Image: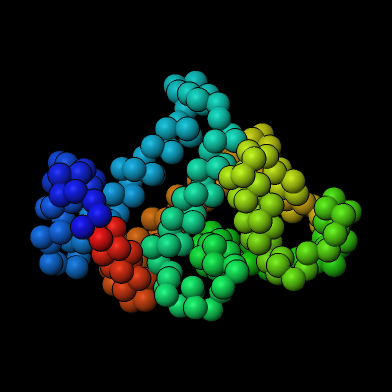
Length: 223
């Protein structure tokens, strides 16, 4: 048993704290799935949302576009782990597991992100990076994952995906110059909608595969 029974797991169905020992005793799959959502809500969604809150003047209470962008990318990957078939992903993607995990979530956020970049985009991209990367970048979401998620995590900077908290769209694809610009606040809003959609389908048994994978994720937490 990796995590002690007395460790806090999240919120119970009654909104009160629930601990690992209590959760391990639960056998009802529907209860497990709701507890999983409660846990992600408490530890991730609600805490990150604090970076997105506005005051009575409609001004941000905390100005933190970079941390919000980083946490949104982390949240996308977390949800990918929940709904993805991890055994299959590991078997089929020896070197690109993380990309395989997040790609379905990006597609749910907006199908545009699953489109193949244009020839103009590839040419502009090569001018920025000094090399072609067509083999690993087959979708616009791959650009976000590799050139923002990875570089943010390993150096807190990005090259090829930039931030602008004032733009009116969640992201803009600059085809001619080969880069993306993301508004972290609108991007987070789009993720939040997708997150609720995913869990609605999991809890309502509309997506059996997601539900099965979410239960497997839940069970892995308890090991």
